Amino acid sequence: MTAPAGENVPDARYSVHSLELGLRILESFDRDAIDEMSLSEMARRIGVSRSSAFRLVHTLQRLGYLEREDETKNYRLGARVMSLGYSFLASKDIAELARPDLQRLRNATRCSTHLGILDGAEVIYIARFAAHKPVSAMIAVGARVPAHATTMGRIILAFKPAAYVAEHFGGRPLAKFSEQTPVTLEALAGMLDADRRRGYVISHSNFEAGIASIAAPIFDAKGEIVGAINVSTPENAIDVERFDSDVCDALRAAARRISELSGYREAAFAS
View 1: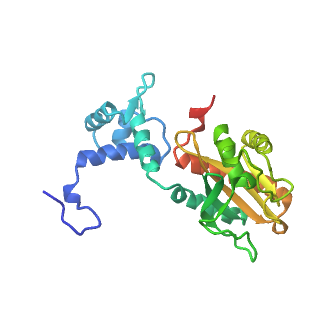
View 2: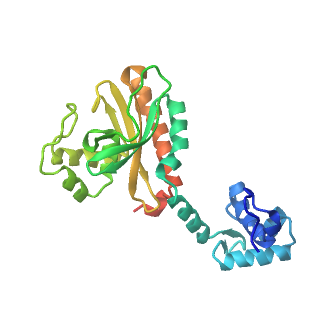
View 3: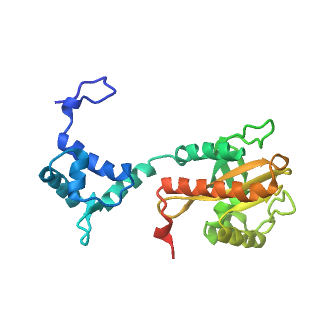
């Protein structure tokens, strides 16, 4: 039997009640940010008897969606739930994941916010939220900029293998945009080492005169660098001390949230 065609909402007549109850158990952990629950608590939350809950919980545990703590006898979410979550997130475009945080960051800092990815020796802008100012840094989605001279480019390169950097920036002089631009592979490598240890890059007129920018990295579930976000603003439109401290902190927090949405867990990759 098939469900009637042309309906946006599935017909409840075709629902599997036990499956619905099992999913409600899993959802109840996330709803209240609870790490562990007893069998009785899960039964109470979904409105069934303890014996009915036992069969549901036993099935979820057997399939790896729940794990039982030997010491407390309580249950927690299993690795299978995380696997499903990562599979879902992997299907999402990074720009789609980043947009809400980019917009909130723009509103909080009053700076333009951007998301960029690396393509060879260039950064491609793939998302942008312009600042609500008469004058703001103007760059369009799809624009390409040299990675070695820009904040997003440098922080992405900082977490790339040295062989990648040498392949794309070695054997030739690099274009100079200001006195701060590295023009040799050796100078760039030295900057990238400092950028990696710092975890972000700040620029004051380093690429474009009169424009301040800060960038922070975005990582995926494997701990690999996949892009960067930045904030930018005319230098005369913001207090330098506030930009280098408060705005920088807000940017780094947003980058961490986007990385976590992409499946990144710092503890999993700590040495």
